[in-house]
Length: 324
Image (cartoon, rainbow, N blue to C red; front, side, top):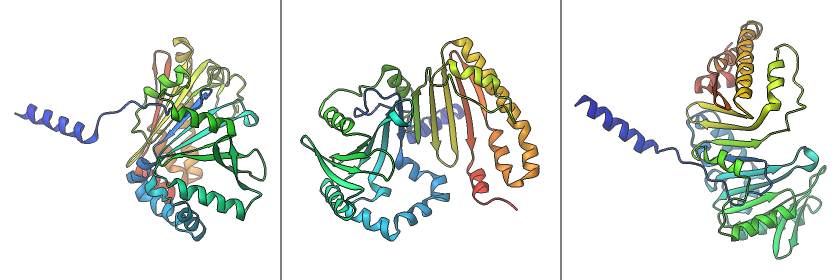
């Protein structure tokens, strides 16, 4: 009887929480993306720790006179209307970076376009409405740097990008029935993640970490510096609830490289842990850092190294309102 009750309880909990569901990359993501990020905006706003420590501040910022007026003109309530965001990026540096941001939610296309036209008349040096073929785009020109473009795909999707071509391609992909055209390696990484996560990012970094320079003091990072060039992929997953759980995975070129990375990270964690007590003695407000470090672990799994950590709600409270 006791065993059957336990089984019933486990089944009920699983039904209430729901199983982890593999993430599916957004089909509008650019084919040449080497980094993809996902933000479960609605879930983050509903998380206990956000409600406790950040929700009121967010509401106050959105209720400001300027922000409120702009949002009303757009017919947009970010707290209710934005659900999730996908970002696809490529490039090796600031000068050649290309990016597309895909925002899903509930939108009023007519109001968004009208708000863009109002902004272009009010501040024409920064905002303008431009035509690209049959597409109507909203252009933003910052004081420094390249322009950004955006448009409304439909009443559930808005896109923003670094150039007109990336926007046009996304609009064409929206009309196709095909799945995301991103690299198979990125697709595999994303499908191995949970779409209920608050945030995740995956990146192909092979060859990009070869020349990374790490400081020599106060912690010896030489082992990490040697292991980084052997990294092929990286991913980070953030789960926000009553606490914040973080998981970082290094996809290494082979199992030997994974062992080297695992040993290097274990040493860094140990050395930082030994350094923190002196820091706390000097600065008591740094005490939450010690609490966070106690939760950090690293584990080698074949050709991957997984680092996990947790920031509890209580620790976040202490960081926001330090003791003493």
